[in-house]
Image 1 (cartoon, rainbow, N blue to C red):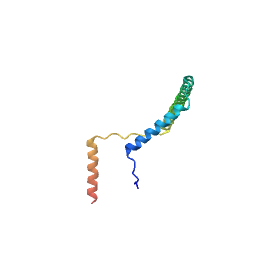
Image 2: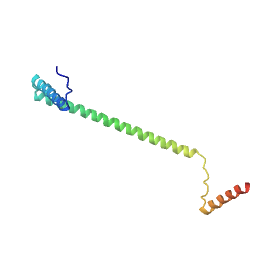
Image 3: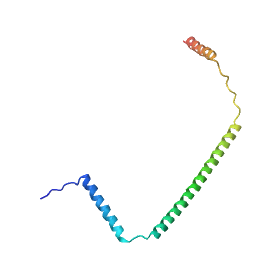
Image 4: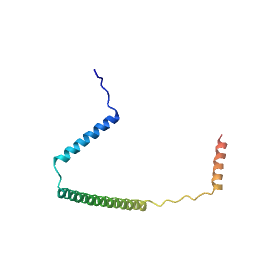
Length: 114
């Protein structure tokens, strides 16, 4: 009695190629295709693709316009918020020597507490 043997990768490739060729032969034998019908189908497919591309472009332009409008609205809102805020006084910038003097004073106060 013969034992079952797993088909190797090459065997599976060959079987798949045979099945594909058999299906292709069956399709070719089914009905000859008229070149006029092929041209008509191709033109219809191209027209459909052109319409879809136009629709995608319109949708993209609409989306981009909406994003720009939202960005402009956001910028306008932020500008209004900034205008409504009270003016804050800026702290004067300290020189490194002044910063060191403040640090030293804090250190001396800490030492004096102990």
